Image 1 (cartoon, rainbow, N blue to C red):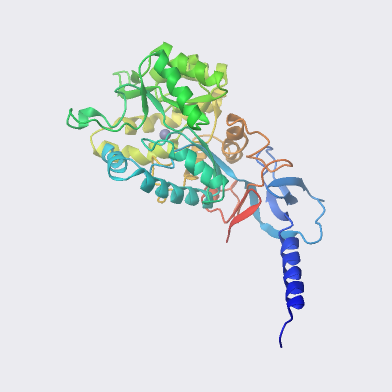
Image 2: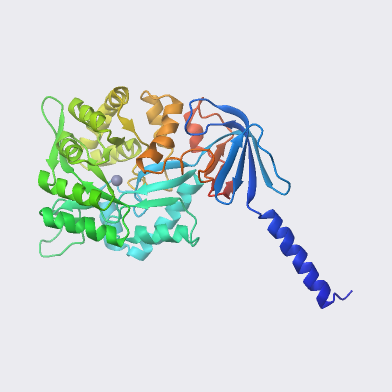
Length: 432
Ligand SMILES: [Zn+2]
């Protein structure tokens, strides 16, 4: 039978109409158990209504409009998309200095960016819908491009909040000329500065290129005193650190400080940074200062665990010694009321080999309740990113970033390493 042109047009119209109905933008998720990211209570049989990229209603009696796409997760525990507040999408694991050098010296920035896209996809499939990415490590502003590529739908990945290049003091970072012929001019993993003016210039420059956060390396060169305490060398002068933080603040940006011992933590907190990252050797003074100033801690336990053995075998046992003490440090900081935000340093470990959700297991083993651990990757991390109400919670107005697992993460937190459903901004990314 021949179809007339008019009939064809009519058919096309009907198809487009039905496509319109199906993608009318209204989706309903039926959640068997809901952990909403904010409250301590688990709610049963909750309906989540989504329009476009946002959640518009949550509750037991939310109306399901005709034509809405219905997603049945009645046999699952549903949670907000997870947030990792310390990652490096442009790194793919660096246990040793050599691992780092290979990536910086033998891989071009375009190649590293392609690897980053794969890492981001992996992360999203694991349920992480937002990452604060803290430094490209010699890959310029490729993170700004990756963020743009996600926003424009070029690649599939988590929302990125980026830092561009981290900042360190001259001569205090890889690639170190100590490891290469001195006449070579080695690329640097960071932007190096000396002096207040260069600190201010670096911040202004980075923000102009699209950095959302400023990342500084506050200390390096860790060592242990005979009494067992850990120390390090502070990288900046107090004045340089203050200038960086002041300039960032002037531009309405916040500063994240890599700081491991009191030598890095105390002057960074004093200067006004918003997060202490790693902090493996926080002592009582550090904990007190952080609580007093409301500074967040991203403990990055997963990376500490990942690199300890390999670095010890390569002749540096400092990470291993710090890891042995970390459970005590963690319990102390938690008990004292330090705001602990989920941050793993993914990229410091291999994205494809280790699920960053492993971090939850350490937190629970070392004293947090499973619900507290979940909150570090939901509302606490959202607050630190100034995105409260937008991400990290399942409530009206928030982005429809939703994940689910068939197991109960409150009974076994490792269930979060087996996420079977991922929705980001109202779009289903994964459904097993
Ligand atoms: Zn890091």
